Structure formats: C-alpha cells, structure tokens
Length: 342
Image (cartoon, rainbow, N blue to C red; front, side):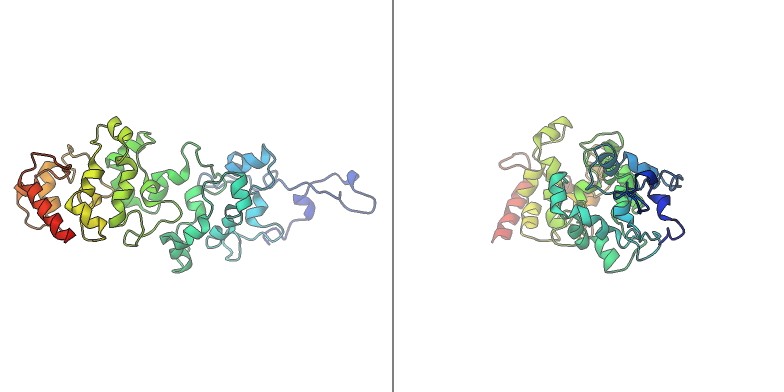
C-alpha cells in the first residue's frame, strides 16, 4: 500500500498506559485522524483537499453527530490496503469510483435511514451515456464519474445551496460549448442571476441515468420533450409569475405536430425544434428562433418545411380548441389532423 513506510502508531494514536498487561495497545483502538499530521496540503483544485471533508455532508455526520455508517476516509480509500489514486486497483481510481460509492448508496438500510433521495444511482449510471462510456468504451479519463459531479472530499447534501451537482458550470467542465450557449439563453441568464426556478441541466437531462437524445425514453428525445418542458410550462403558477401564456403545452398537444409526436413520429416538430435546445430565448428577442422575423427560417429548416411562404410561417402556432382568428391555418391543420387519425 502507499502507507508501507509508516508504522501502525503513525495512524493509530493511543495511550500505552491503558494497554492490558502484555499487550502493545488497548483492546479498543481509536480510529485514525488522517489530517492530524498528514494530508493537510491544499491542492490546486478546490474540494480535493482532505481538509474539506470536515465540512462535507459525510464529515459533519461523522464528526459532529458521530454517525458511524457514513463514509470516512478508509471506507473510500481502503484500510490497510490503501493504494494510490492512479493505481487501477485502487478503490478510488476513476473506473472504480461508481462501484465504491454504491457500497453505501445502494444499501437500502443506509438509503432509508438517511433519507437519500436516489436509491439505485449506480444501476441508473450503468445505463447512462457516462456509464457506458466508462465501462463499455473504456474512456476512463473522459467519462464523468461520481466525484466529477458531486465533488471529492467536499460533497454536499441534497437541498444545500449551490449544490455542485446542480450547477451548470459543473457540466460545463466537459461540455464548455453547451455551457456557453446555455449561458446566453433565457434559462441560463435566470440561473446565473440566482433564480432557483430556472431549469438547469439536470432538470431536462436527468441525473444519474442521462441518456442520449436519440434513445427511446430519454427526456430529451423528440417524443419526450413536451413532457420534459411541461414540468415548468404546464404549471400555471410559474407561467403567470413570468408572464408566459399558460396554454403552450396543451395547445401544442392539440396541434398537428403534437398529435404526430404523440403517435411516435420522430420527425415531427417538438418544442425544441422551434424554440431551440440550449439557446432558448423569448420571442421578443431578435435572436430568438420564434421571433416573427425568424419564423420563416425556423419553419423552413431542411427537415421541416423548406421554402415555406412567409405568410404561413407567420401564422399563429399555439391555437386553442375553438379559437378564432387563425383563418386558413386552422382549417389546414384540422384537415391534416384528420388524415393522421385516418
């Protein structure tokens, strides 16, 4: 192990006077304090220092509340067999970290006792794009593992402010171009301003089971996008608060596009097809894809309606049942819906 040059007493400090006669140490040896004399240096990256453990969700539970079931140094790094993090056999090498964390986070007695909000994170992760990249493709240095998102020694609990796993900047370490695009969107600008109601990456993509948009069941796949957006846009309280019409999800579902999506037609336009993905902006913004000046280009995408006349592209899209004023567009929509149903 990496500690082969140390003696037992370097880690296990005890009073020899309390040792029973003929024994070198007391029957009960106190656990080691790994930062008492060693592991005190501050690394280049925040949160990697073992000194950060004291203020983590694990450290506070162990040091302040004396909870013995929470993760301590040796639960993650090993006891007498501690290996370097660069050693593939180490329990904290990148490839082994997800399985190591699952030792507690998929132990139902621990999950229930401490009210941990996810009960099978490891099994969800195995099926995710990150998990498959790690275990199937061997991208050990590139695939995100638990500590990339949650932190190393400074792991925080769910509900704490500025939770690392919910920060777009965390995802942006691997996805910088997406972060830049998101930061300029209405959602990103609100998130940076501290608005906790604005959606961040995990609200749309999920947490441990993040799937590719082309996969069935992915919350960012075409058929699922309306459901994902409805998490906010079907809530009247949030929509009224920000001056957004409350019927955008319901009118989409009733539209030709919505019906086609409901029938599983993957080529049908969904919310992201028109409004954008990471670059969503209000319609009043000149850069928005649904700004009146840009609608013809948006509807006229090669896979949608090339050469669409400007008059049709500028027609009202979110039309409620029985709503007047939509003219020929509503009539055409009803005819096309009839064809779909037949």
